[in-house]
Image 1: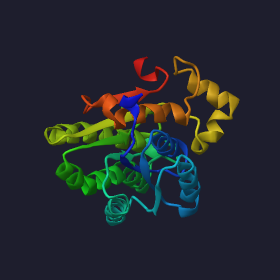
Image 2: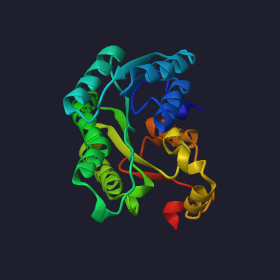
Image 3: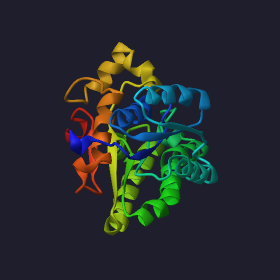
Image 4: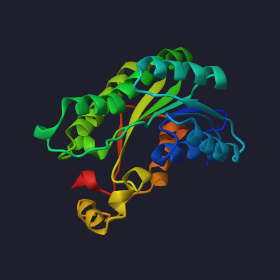
Length: 252
């Protein structure tokens, strides 16, 4: 369908080596886009690049620690130089590797989660904003989380993702007049490699799915399809919106 065709467009996807980021990058390539792949590990990105090239699209690998603001800006510059310009920017890098009551939280842990989930998205937006605004077009998609509504024992992650939503809405308002759209995706529980220990654990999975009306885990591909929608002309009149892809969890 033409409204979902991304032919001739260039995308920049962070956290592209696995999980939701990989699924988004592949979905974009399948829809016709060339993709700059950004993550920490070059070897893993190289495998994703081969998958993209199998669709007949270009893939440019950019190993980068996005918690380093200068490195994030350099990655944006490298992608623009490699692809010519950027049309689509997906800030997907993020995650949390611990669950702890707030009163037991080490402040260094707070800082680490904020840098990975909020500061990385901010740094990319700050670096790519002038390029998109000068071109007068573009779609920025910030991947937040259903945790933005609150997540017990995950205070830094929830706060960071809520801030990503606020950043999304603010940039949408600032950039709308220049033709640049900014929206957010909020995935719910998704069966990625990162949380395999949860979805493979029958008891843990049952507890988590009790809060999901559809009673099942989402797949990375089910997060990627809305990202294709937000990237192209199908969503041309949408900006500042937050899409919850969570099996109904946010509606409870």
